[in-house]
Image 1 (cartoon, rainbow, N blue to C red):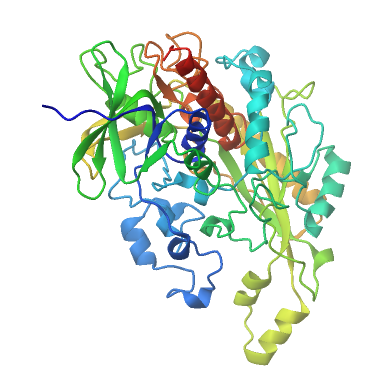
Image 2: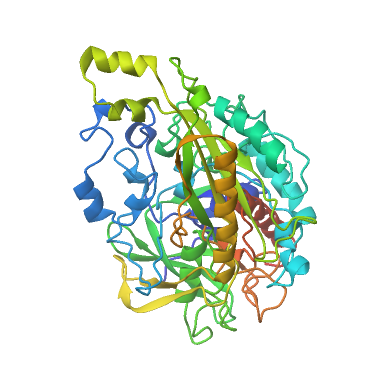
Length: 563
């Protein structure tokens, strides 16, 4: 007699920003939850290194470059992957992918309980109807099937729970939220605020980050060690294992299985999801898990990969791909970086208090209201900071001994840097599909990624460079470095979105307005894959708001017997 299946109310694939919120919402409403995570749990006493000094490391923080090159040739290109924090990133040999030689893609991944929420940049911005209804404004592409007004209460819910520090500015294109007190601007940023505000009319404000400035829901305020990408013992910034997953676990309804590499969704003869097939990361044994509702929250490209690999006679090209839309409209932000210089007026023998884990942001002004640029669609925002370069400066000095100490103490230079981040248009010819030949370490077909920036992005980048250069001129800096000419590599900003986008029409989208796959009412996607447009702002807060909305919808629909 076959063993009895253990069927959970909700099966969630992925434990990061998205999966954590879905689990919290459905578990708190009484549903049983099985969460599968492809990687292992992280142990703070072993894996967090924010309080480790360079002299405690074998390579003094510069890392065993040969080992990183051998095992993480792609991951090491991320600013946060080094000797301190390489454990938060995958082994590239176990997780290959392919791309055309002339269209490189940089795929940064973190497979562990919590996903990339250990080492994300914590920037937390709301989208407005500039993003949700962009097509109605400029005629390009599709609108989201939801509006800012519909998502606003979920933004409120997420911010109130995780804690986001920021200042209220009253800008329609950059909606205010439920903020904790903002972090103070540095002396250099205050000077920039005055100069840029007077010359350009742009608002320079403290960045909005998921970092606590006051105690919040049992978590202490940030102690300003300024090493957030290495983990956080005090959980003063948001990560799902410290915030949303414990909330789900307190209900007694959450079962978490780590090291479970999901390959595809199991579909029944009625064309509905009944669970997933997964492979044990260590033993490579295949297993199955079952749920009345299945939610893919594995990050945009991984969720799409699972759907593409879920092939059967009913779905020969993958679940959700009946119209050939699955995998299409991949987006990632592009950046113009490297602009900066020294601020002579702030050179000092005293060091400014250091440690704030954020700088400033200047929200989007291009193509907002009456400020129209006919050279390109959509827009971009700026970020940067001013800081004293004590350690970098000290390492480069030629003196030794007492002469070196005297030089360091007497004259600390002050650096100012600014960059810009632009919106990538959703284009059908930016897509992912399964590679017909290559598989990962668990025998699962890998993605072939085809992506590039188009004419609009290059035209926008020209305006971004001009604006950054103008700011550098007005700041009266010395030793100026102009902004770089090259656009960042596709994927470098780790904001990949799209490929299973949301919409009312099954012919042009993969999921509906509730993130349910068209025609498969009990299969949901709740991460960045569902984005229709990307805007120029980081997507994580919007991913969490969407996930909270999805969790609430699943619970209510389950109560009504609709899923």
